[in-house]
Structures are given as C-alpha cells and as structure tokens.
Length: 141
Image (tube, rainbow, N blue to C red; front, top):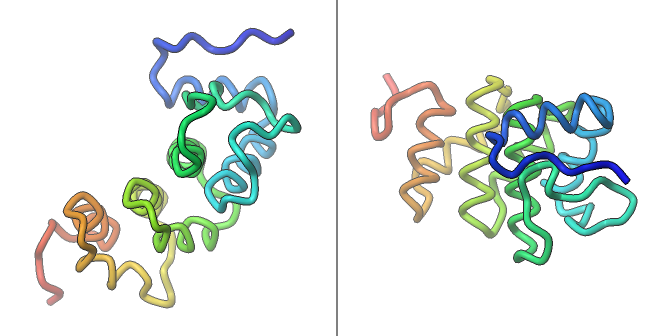
C-alpha cells in the first residue's frame, strides 16, 4: 500500500508529490473532476483525497475546494472547468476557483468574473478583483 503524504506538508508540496507519484496529467484530471463535482472525494478509482490535503467524510463542497487548490499549484488542462466553478453554490469553491484564474491568468472571454465583484461574500469579491488584475474595489478605467 502506498503511504499517504505527511499532513504537515504545505498543500503545494502534497499536490506536487501526488503529481510525481500518480502523474501530472492524472492529478490534473482528477482535480478537475473534483472541482466540477463529477468525481466524489471518496471515489475508489482515484487516490485518497489526503493526497490533496483533503479529509475523507467532509461535506461534498470541500472536495471541490481541494480540487481547485490542486489546480492552483498544477494549473488546469481545461480552463472552462475552473471558470464554471466560479458559479458554485459554495463561496469557498468560488473563491478558490478565482485564485486559480488569477494565478494562471486564465482567459475569461464571456466576462464571468466581472459579475463576481458584486458577490455577497467579501472574500469572493476580493479574489474577483484580483483575477481581473485590479486592487479590490478599483473601478475599471
């Protein structure tokens, strides 16, 4: 049996270790499936969620957050999956998806992010402004 990563490692280190062990493309695909909700955090066809610093048995939205966090460190193969997650019912998923958008400068041709500067959750609004490349609350020029 494959040993799980040390829980004291930074999430970035755990995700990179998972990519080394299982393959970059496999972990990116798995993470995108988690983020979209197509893959459950306890799916036996994939590694233990602990590889992404997740915890088995937590509410379903956390698997989507952990999927997004992995993509933050590895980059997505399908940017549309990340952009779609910006409309998730969970603010934590929206916030983390926006962090991925900002970190990887994902294109947003439909202007999805613009609407999130008015999100009811401040942490989401801040990340929306960041993803747009402006300080929080700065009006467009």
